[in-house]
Length: 215
Ligand SMILES: *Cc1c(COP(=O)(O)O)cnc(C)c1O
Image 1 (tube, protein in one colour):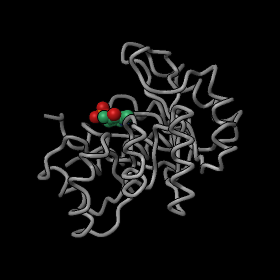
Image 2 (image 1 turned 180 degrees about the vertical axis):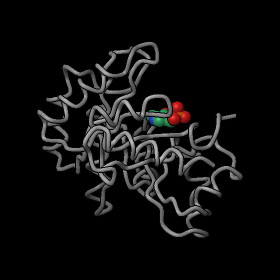
Image 3 (image 1 turned 90 degrees about the vertical axis):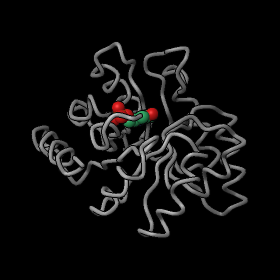
Image 4 (image 1 turned 135 degrees about the vertical axis):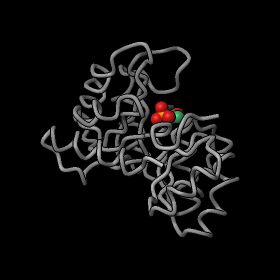
């Protein structure tokens, strides 16, 4: 279990960038990991986790929450509107708000349920056709649209193309966040979280570096 090693590396990257390590939220991405790897991280006291799929998370987390108490659960993967209610019941934060129809559904459910998770707008900074996220050129108008629906926007999120250096994508995301007054930046994974911290990440999403390769 290398949670403490990852936290130490994140803290060092923050300090080197002149940032407060406490300003960086480490999301332990437990998707597809066996229970035997997740329990030690819960036992170590970590309470911030990320998952990609609503159904997988709904199958695992209620039992662990009963055992260990409340956790902060972050949905990182694409969200279908027919799973939106289940997602809003389970997750404290959703990182994949990326289209008007989903924004409208979340807004309607938030009215109905009297609560809404914190939201990140996912931006497809690499304009990759197979990837989720709003295109950068549409992000300002989409953010305005989500705001007009009274959705609780916390920040912006990206997954840079695997084949490119991530720095320019992190810069681009930080610009979109700054010009829209969104303070939180969800960026950086196992291979690039220290770089992301240098570029201003407030939420890093680290899976395999903590838990080992997914099987
Ligand atoms: C799986 C995943 C992660 C974690 O990836 P690792 O490379 O294992 O750290 C982070 N963010 C998203 C959106 C993911 O799907």
